[in-house]
Amino acid sequence: MSPRAQIGGRVGDWQSVCRERDANDPRAYFETHFVPVRISSTEAESGLLTGYYEPEVEVRRTRQGVFTQPVRARPDDLLSADLGAFSDELAGQRVMGRVEGNRFVPYRTRDAIEIEDAGEPLAWGRPIDVFFLQIQGSGRLVFPDGEILRAAFAAHNGLPYASIGRELVARGELELHQASKAGIERWLNENGPDATAELFAVNPRYVFFGLESLPDPGLGPRGAAGLPLTPMASIAVDPTFLPYGVPVVLSADLPDAPGWQGLMVTQDTGGAIRGPMRGDFFYGWGEEAERRAGSTRSQSEWIVLLPHAVAESLLQPA
Image (tube, rainbow, N blue to C red):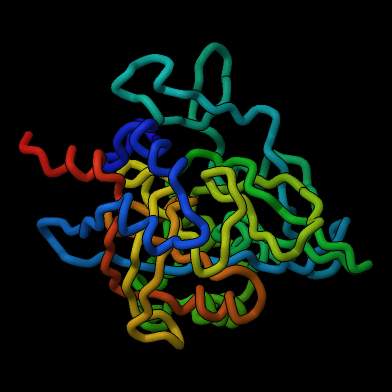
């Protein structure tokens, strides 16, 4: 379990119930071995739910025409430091940076990465497509000869994520209900390359990728838990609150599915996913997944399913 998670318990608490899993009668298994615990906070009974997907991005092997933005590999000088190696209180926390002289300093900003050409280009895409590829964290690169490779998340530059949709709303360029992926993309196309580059710079976080073959197109990308994501069943969470692998019964109004309720598993995280009831719903890939992910912004109610030992430890007085 994550050493940072506020809810999680011990590894042994989960291993014992996982060994008892029954694929023939999953309902009875969950009812016997788990306790439903509703998540709430002093501020609210529900939390914000958004959506994400694995985009398909048209690319070229060299820079040409409108394909001017590189999909970059992780630079050799981008280093990760595990702070838990220095202090038990910082267990599970990492920082990204590089060595400058004899100092470990923060890594380059988005602008500096582009200016200094940090990271080998793996392919070239349209600037808007590559930016949204970074937001999603992985994607399928479609080459002119029909080859499809997965751009798998390799690293980010360690700087905080900032929403360009929120920035456009703050500037008065868009209303809140217009700040979906489709609305943002429409604004970008209407305002041209210079405005696009200036807006992208608002978000200092930069994501690097590695290329992988796609032997089974029916499998999703690997989430932060290291396992393939499953459409409509995997959710990204804040690992400082919930560890990976926790079953969650989620209730929310989804696009085309008001009053939806389903069983999810925490398998991923993201730069904008912060807080006890903040989730990102994985829709899969393809046009429908893109449409639904881009328009998901709903309040959601959370019930986590915890082994008896974990639930009992949470209910004990401090």
